[in-house]
Length: 416
Image (spheres, rainbow, N blue to C red):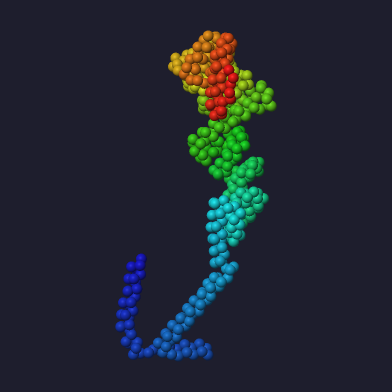
């Protein structure tokens, strides 16, 4: 582009020299004549005198315009309330304010960002930063006022302001107010992923599992979370829902059992195959006295999907047919002969059926593979019943030591 301009300049010089050579000499011989007459005005001169006058007038106008421009610029530099100084104040205040905010100097950040917001035509980011600083200082009413001012100045940014407001309300523990804010935004922006994510965090924090489960399809549809995060969130929600259902009805077991069963039936079939959820449901059934139902639920699952944690739980249940239950567990032993958890379960099932000798063998074999406090306690209880008190006391002490080690607490001295 610069080369093109240079070529044009050279071409203009060549044309000018050629024109001077071709036309300059004839014009020098003939000075020309200019006459301007208008009503009573009359102007006469040679052509070259007129050209000189025109150039002088053009130069005068140019100098006047340049002088006016310089006066305006210098006036802006000298006037502290000029646009130039106003833009400079906004820039300096915003730079310092955001730096203070990032470094945790809340009072200075609040002062600088408020100053930037007052002088800026687009003050949203400054108001949001100032509201955050006021929140960190504990000035919650000032924080809300700043967000209100931001809404008045830029009403088209309602969603951004509401999201910030809800986040601050959650941080203050104002869960109900945050819920009102987010639900209002959800009604106006039903598919916005940030609104959905903040609602998800609120429901999770409040333990509102039913609301969270109702939100999951929309989170999945809008891809507000990754697949792995959604799967974990769904498991967490159903885990909380099952535990919540078992604690309803003010401790009345029949009502709590009915609520627990309804929650399990409402769960998607795929979730019924999750070992963690299955364990929670079976354990809650056991605590509510429905051990036979829990055993009937675990037995077919364990035949297809062996799981050590569920096998341990299976040994705590008393099914409707203890003999069949023991046979089922013994069939698993062929494929898992060294599973200490399964051997503990077999020992417990033998205790349920009062098969003392068999129970002792299973429990001792389990301890040979793994020293577990529950196994020590079961065998100690059995040995005490059989009259072997010294070994029973020794196993009780060992179980306590193992439990203390698990809890990472210093073991209490135990007298012999």
